[in-house]
Image (cartoon, rainbow, N blue to C red; front, side):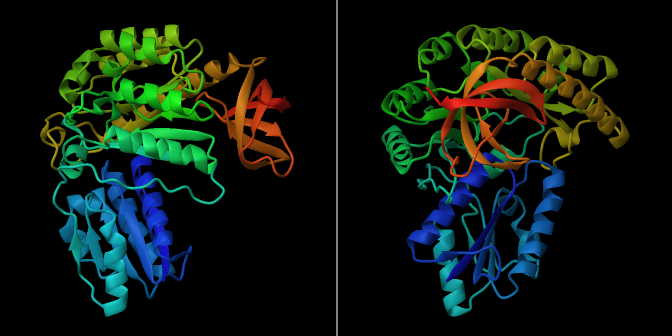
Length: 432
């Protein structure tokens, strides 16, 4: 059979989609871009905007695969299976659990001509073990070690569609890291829905820091990069124990959402700007020059102009390398959707524009500080104008002149100027 896969949303969705691709290959199927016998769409539900993207993606997949069994799975399928089930284009609706069975369900539907199946619409109680897939030609791999969230921030639908925290058993996580390292990938991105909560559901007393120390020690030739982190994780133990590992990328995506304590309280975020500031400083002390990146929601219900200005000032104080800015999106089913003082769309968009302008200046200032420095860059793909693009341990791409056959090589580079969304450099030879 021929399978086609598409994913929307976060790195966890991408990991799960790559894992399903890997499973399909192991079962003898061919992966194609169009004209498939079965098509699988992994959906996102984080904002109302993503809802429209999901529907468009269903139509697009049906257009490109007119005769295929089309399975729609993931967060939006978990959130609103009735809506998807009513779509003529969607043959199967699968939620956020029992992912591995999606391939078998598609096989059966193609073989027997059965449509209208549903799968995995109950929130899971245990972590589903999926082997990480590494698409051909990729230099980096994703490793999902955790699923679910127990925080229930007032704006967020994810705990309702992903369920409670479930952690990958440490032995399995370590084995997957070893397998990926043996496959030749040069960087592993450790990801999950809320990886700072890793281990709280396990009988074995182990946390994220414990697991990372073992992964880093066992695979010294592989660079490890962390996915999004809750600010509380960056305590003295985390920084003190991890700072000695040269293969940990000094790039920390520390979730913020707002730089105003009053807004953080309405969001039900479990930290203050004081704690955030202290932990950001601790990371910078332990990992000099590290990249701090974050997410920001502007226009949250009740956010005043003064509160927004507090956030802009906090962004400047923290000196982020990059910030993903989102205007607040009403998500039905969340506490925030019922809050009074919903702001007009025009106000939210105007604040997003202002925040993005401030963020652009911060990013350029951060990258300018690297001009003249030498870094190790993992080259990934051609980027036009005779350049290759790759990633140093930090949170920006590097563009460097390189020839054919450069993919998946580590290059020692001197950074010469801020360029595009990263920096440009000159190759000095193989990484030392």
